[in-house]
Length: 189
Image (cartoon, rainbow, N blue to C red; front, side):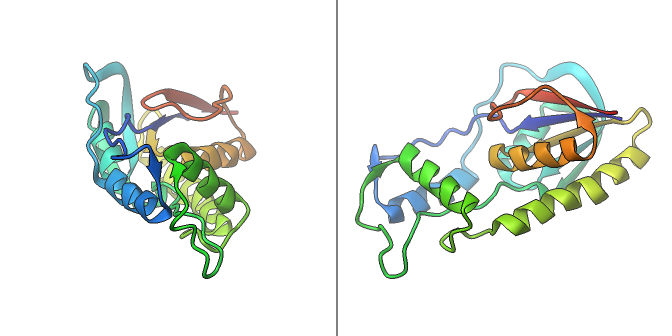
């Protein structure tokens, strides 16, 4: 089976300010969820896919429409890992102003450390990745005539999914941090 993994196209959503409070960061995240993507110049005609498994979040759905697939399946299992501003009990960091990049790094690090301020626990995300590989990918293999499956997802979840795919015997080039719109090809060994 040939598997393609692609991150959604770049999102058009810049913060109104360069320094944000925790509350402003959380509002920015909510806006990011519904913001439009930057339209690529042309549709991707390089590859044809038997099936496209896609996150049901708006930015991934719009990205998937630029790929040539016979069938599209939208699922919440491929959603991005939820994040929020880091908080410590009553001290929510709500008055502290930080650049957006700092809030993003703090949120991802606190998620990786299992901090309770994050909406989705690490164990739940790892289980979600296992579920995708256990159920969605074999389902796609059965539906795919040539075994060509495209997965459209999100940056942080793609890192988790990459590790799970490698653990299951899929081979691909190392991705580092996934770039928007870049295709990563996996082959089952």
